[in-house]
Length: 179
Image (cartoon, rainbow, N blue to C red; front, side, top):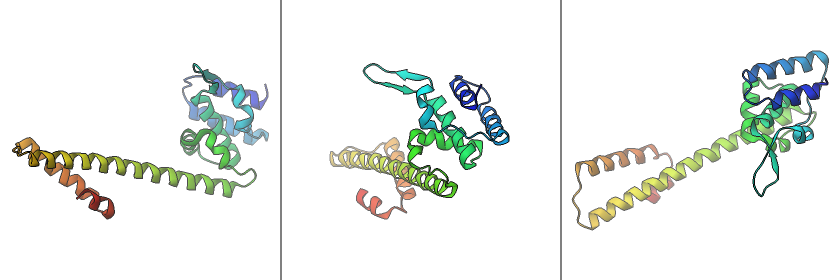
């Protein structure tokens, strides 16, 4: 059995316990026997796929992540946990970040992509929090404008709202928009 067949077989096993161990074993095998990891784009068609109604078949996530993680480990020297995290986060998008023959450029591209990903996720969560706080403030303003008395639960909710606003104080322009 060729090395590529071993990779496809290992990636195709669903729910494999010890995936990290299998990845490490295949990476060691590649190093000791001089195998290159198969390019994920070249073997995606050989991986198990899911066909949804009205759509083309797409590779299953787990085998896809496995193949990309192995490629990152063999070709770019990533540790198994980092390779799996990166492969799970970006999957086929990694093809655009990997520069064949340039470990430094590839690692730089992936690091920049991870930083952008984390920043986007943080910005999105802040925006959602601000939207929730804005809605709460509007609700309390309407309640007071309608002449309703605040219950002790309402006062507690306002205190929590103020506390949440204080945590966002570093984002001054966004907080000012709430007031």
